[in-house]
Image (cartoon, rainbow, N blue to C red; front, side, top):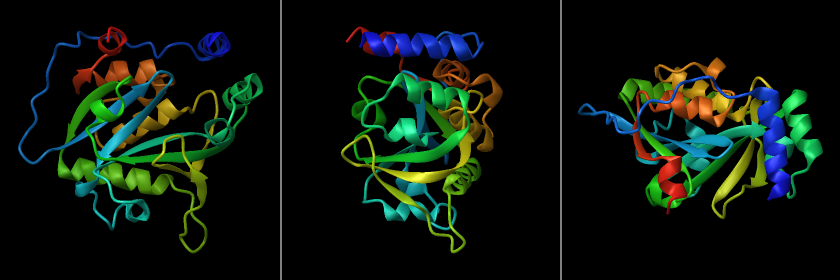
Length: 224
């Protein structure tokens, strides 16, 4: 644990916080009829997006059909070596931060609501119009690295019992992190968020709180 704190402090010294002020978590956003709820999940240093599978247009994100049946899919993006490592090391941390490296998509499929499946994570609900949701699906589809035949590259099981890694497009580095990818995905869906101010999870979550509905904050789950 002490080792990870040291690694985390080092990364924060390298990249800093997102620089966004954090509004009060009490504000609740009311959705419109026909909107689709997605969820931004903060896992400490990392963020992901939870998608309700029943609304995914097959022609816009056909790869989701490769996964077993489930109500939700969480999508995250990150450094290939660090994300898949059995044991993280300081070298992997520094390499991921300071040198452009290959990336992966991490997909987790599950049935319970996000707040139940990730009991130790911040969860923010974001409501999208069907058109915006479709744009988000296209963004995810385009993040898969595909060969000349359009075939994806399955890399093996993920970090959860029901999860998997796929080779992704883009390179991971100090100024293009997993959190920048989350913000870019939300931006593609029309959300008022700046990927450039989202290097850290703090940068993503503090911006998302302004237009989303907070279901659980860090202070909430820390007290449980």
